[in-house]
Amino acid sequence: MEPTPPPLPTPKRPRVGKARGGRKEIPDAEKRTERIVLHVTKATYAELKDVAKASGRPLAVVVRSLTRPQRKGLTPEQFGLLRQLAGMATNLNQLAKRGHQDGFGAVADQVTQAAAQLSALLDTYTGTAGGDD
Image 1 (cartoon, rainbow, N blue to C red):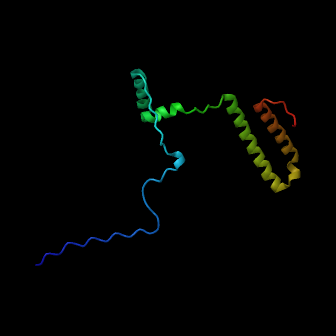
Image 2 (image 1 turned 30 degrees about the vertical axis):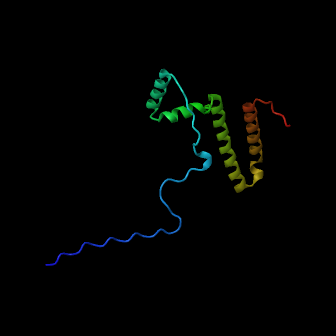
Image 3 (image 1 turned 180 degrees about the vertical axis):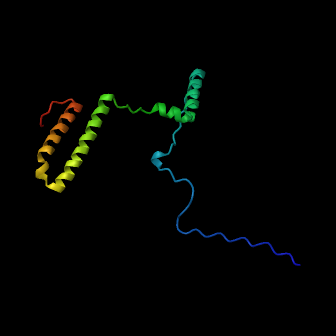
């Protein structure tokens, strides 16, 4: 009995086009090319390391986040105004649908009323007394 020869390796499939794998290239504007050397005390370094460990992020990410301006959260009053605005937008959507179905003359008074409420809400938010400029 003769031994069977080992199978020949299958040739690699040639690439078609410019398709390539791997990570996408970062745009030049987003590349981090500048270096900052920062000297801190041992106590500050230990504090930063603790913050990094507690948050599960690298130390560089923690320091970078501390140098950027933080976005302010909404106050409860602003959040309430946004909820009212969302409710009014829903009402206007429903009025527009009904206007398309029944004719805009049927909903004209309700649209005027909704516009007045919206104007009053915006005046409250911006702190201006309603008046046309």
